[in-house]
Image 1: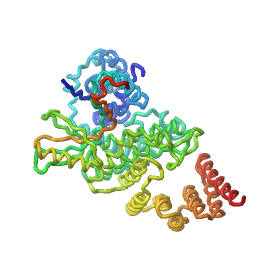
Image 2: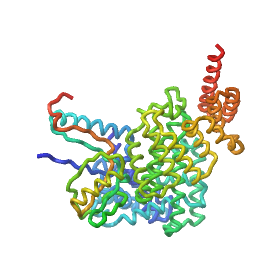
Image 3: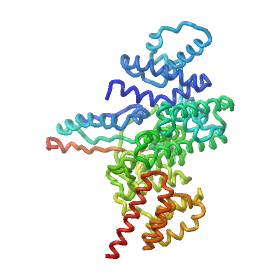
Image 4: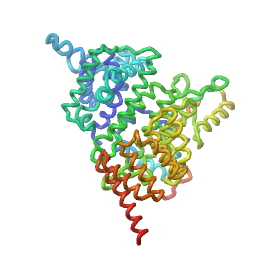
Length: 419
Length: 128
């Protein structure tokens, strides 16, 4: 724990609110960002000496506003800067008086900022990059590493997003109630994508990308704070927490993927599970189910099972059935089939996925699951063919290695039978 | 005299702590708590989940109103608390309604407990 360790957390926590207020003030992402950057640097100097201000966000907004104005002025004509200590000595009382941030302002500011980042004029990849850069405050280098692209490419992606925001005349106003619901759905979709980007199956990328999962959770909590009574946002936050809780158990010592049923459940993060379960419990009370809530409910069943064999697969089958009706997709049906194989046996599961062959023929998981069902039915030759297809379609060496293990088990079984 | 120590902090900050930082803080608190427990001075300790998990029962009206989120008013003061063990939020709300009937007015905030250390007084002088 370094001396400035606490400052990092305070800056991270204050960032969304401060940036959001600065965007309202300057109506420009770059100016707001630069001003915040400058204020953070001054905080690093002033806070260790004076201690943290009572309201860190208000302090940062105040100092950043002055800094932003200075830099705008500087680019126009070279005016002298005001003395530094004028700003460092800013007392809390002044900050509060100058920048009265009531709860409503705060809510609108952050919503406006999230809506700007998730504007429909931006493709999803740009929305994600912009939100991570502007709202979460990740560096371009961190984002580039997480998305496995060069820093220059990510810089360009973010610059494009910003210029599109500027040229599309994305309004820095908060939209009306009707548009709000739609735009909020775009924000939840963005957060879910950020999480999935981080939820990698490749151990080599795990370190750089796991940060994305944490950012997604932070963004979900932020959104939930703005919509405390919205069950789908509770569901989304719960889903992310329950999935992320398993992250320490997802890879073995060699970096190979460990399937849910083989994971060491003592390594699951109990605190995150408790928070996820509490949120899904809250969401259910509203009796307004949605896809995130259903997926969270499925994750909750896994979280509640102390051992893999305690899993309530019939309940998971039912929940996937609900999800199929809400969001029909062959991938959801495939997931349901896995639950069906546990609850009702491999024959029922196989019958369920055979009609999906057309649409999922190029999908690694389809052939992997099909192979597993066939093996359970003792149809080993067909299982072998399915596993071979899966290996050919594997997205990573880890996935291929996992299927090879299945084939080894298959041949071991055959050997035993022959001997 | 028994004292309750109520812990306040900005949860966006504590949620921004890295796992290492969080573990280190808990370890340092653990040292103090262990000594207090050995001295028979420590009762139950709870670390609550974030306020996003909270539900509030306003019992200043009939029937009481359930709202999502923490208790945010400032004109009431914190006067006491219960720790209850329930299977669900619904059950907890049922208990709160019952308590509220016995004592209407004000509100109950129902917040899940994340970490619970049961260090009852009876542990005094017992080797840990």
